[in-house]
Structure formats: C-alpha cells, structure tokens
Amino acid sequence: MVHGHRERSISDEQRREFLKALGVGGAVAAGGATLDDVRDAVETGETAELASVGEAIRSDLAGSLDRGLLADGHAELATAAADLTAVPERGLPGADAGPREEFAAVASAARPVYDHLGEVGFFQSTTERLPDFDPGYVEDSVRRFVVSEGLAGSLSDLDFAEDELVDLLATVVNHRERLGGRHWVSTDRLPREQMEVGEYIPPMTKAAAGGVLLWLEDLDDHLWRNGVILTDEILADATWDGRAMAAGFDLMVDGARRIADPDDDTADDELAGLLSSGFALQAVAQNLLPQDAYWVSEEMRAERDNDLEIPN
Image (cartoon, rainbow, N blue to C red; front, side):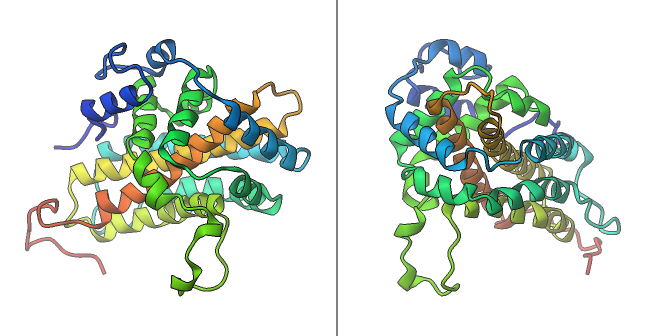
C-alpha cells in the first residue's frame, strides 16, 4: 500500500511520553493534539539558563549575519522541503528513471545558508554557548519553544500541519536520553585519542547541520539504487526523517534570522529554546534515518522478485 503523504511513524504512545515529559500528560489527548493544544496546557518553567545562553549567542553574532541571505535561504528551503510531503505518494523511483533529486533539492537550497553561517562564526558560537544536551535541558528547551507562540511559524512554510509539529517535538523529547549520552557530545569532550579521522573536528552544531545536508544529498540515490529491497513503509519513514531534518535546519535558520533583525523582539530564552530545539531535531532525525531506511533487515525488506532488474 502506498502511504498517504500525511502518514507518520509517530505513535500515540510516543506522543503521550512527550506530553508527560512536559507535565501535561493528563490534560491533552495524545491522538489529535496540536501545538496550540499543548501550548495552552504547558507552563513556562525555569528559563534562566536558556536566557543566559540566548543572550551570549546574540552578543557574539550581532551585526555579522546577512539578513537578506537568510530570508532567501528560508524561502528556497521551504519550497524544496514542502515538496517532500508528496514523496510517499509518488512511490519509489523506477529502476530506469534514475534518482529524483527531491531530497538533494533541499540540501542545495540550504547550502548557501550553511556556508554563510560557517563564515560568520555562528557554529563556533553556538557550540561554545550551548550546554550539553542532557534530558533536563532538552525538556526545558522544547517547553520554551512550545509556549512561545510564533516560534514554530516558519515551519508552516515547509508544509507541516499542526499535529505534525507535535510529532516533530515528540521525536526530540522521546530521544532526550540518547541525545545526551550518544548523539550530542560537546566537541571539547570528544575522545580524540580514539579517533582516526584526522585532527580537525568541526564544532558540534556545524557537524549537526552539515550532517543533515550530507544525508539529504545521498538519500535520493539510495532510494533509487536500493528500490528493489525497499518498501512503501520504509519510503514513508525516510521521508518523515528527511522532512524532520529540514525542519530542524530551518529552525536553526530562523534563530539566525531573528539575531540578524535589529527590530526583532524575540526574548533571549526564546532564542535559545528555538536554536536548541532545531539542533536537537537535526541530530535525532539524522540518526533515525539510517535505522529506518539504510540498515534494512530481512524483516523490513520487500519481498524478493527475481524478475526485477537491479540498476547499475
């Protein structure tokens, strides 16, 4: 069965865990909850650490960001990412058709922004200023993101529905333990003596955003070359992961846009919550993608058909 373009792999149990982590498990129904529903029930909580982080990042980058380039980058990213919603409906590319370059188009749109942020020290600042993503910090960041009306507004341009926004945040919160323990280790704490990839290790936030672009650049070719073993379900999961990576990248860009705008009134704790949620979503989604679409087990794979021709 070909998945409808709004079908997702987030379960009601995962949504309940997300709501419980934010302290509203009994106040909001898990199944059809929208971000507005959650916002109405969640309390702001402690934000002093977030405010300190946001203030420091804003101070580091004031006057260095190109507001026009960031706005154009968001618009191009949004157009390309919105097109991904229909990928499951289109199905896997045929063996003779070649890669469709749908995910690569998102990476191409995002690349100029990524390069600009690297040039002005954005990744260096955010890596230095953001604390370790332990479970408590992830919860505080997502909570601040949720209660601040307007922070998720840019994601509507990427064609995310209201209930899908809840699923994006549930993805982050449900992986908060793994984020702190495995996926988000600050650059200065990496065991360099155990690493053989070279002396240079990029700032953690740059690695997160750059990793998103690399996965998106590879995914179209992977779906084409391995179409004979992939299923509609795997394609739907891969699409959701790709859209989640694009969403996390866009939240990062939105944070940079707010810093670049001298008239923006985003509070420091809101800025930190926005950036932290964006980086966390990028890190989680790109670690889910290989599990969902690359490491295909016998149980996951499509039924064998010896009449199919495998592309070279």
